[in-house]
Image (cartoon, rainbow, N blue to C red; front, side, top):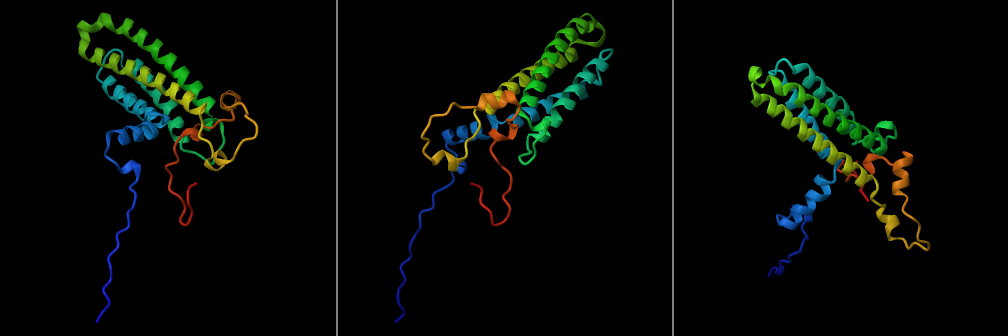
Length: 207
């Protein structure tokens, strides 16, 4: 008589990020989307591309909006590209560089929008107000996104993730957090506060 085998079940805990619970979804967005500067870089690139395309149909002010959209793309694309670099240390991976570039871009966008509204409004009757209003709205949206990106970069750089191994060790002396000093001294990298979503080499584990 063959021995009967008892079927056993093993409980496997599911990943929190795989849950469809609203709280889990919100925590995932907070961790990977809202406080990730790359989210705002992508939004700025999309907004600039839209401004560029629509400004081709706007006359006689298409050079101004094309130049504005080109400036946005020239500033944001390198920042977006180098924000993924974790093993490089140069001026484009510095959080201070990202913050300075975003602040300058924000000021330029606000000044450019005021100038464009003042210049284009008298010519609504000739070229149509709908397209001018659309370009103006897109410009203000880009300015708001740039402001939000600067805030996220500052917030993320001054609250960098700690090494999980070092966090478990007891600290005999309470040392002052040097995150803000690291930001202004230029030693903080933009990727320090971004969740590492790169693929691990085969046979290695991410700690």
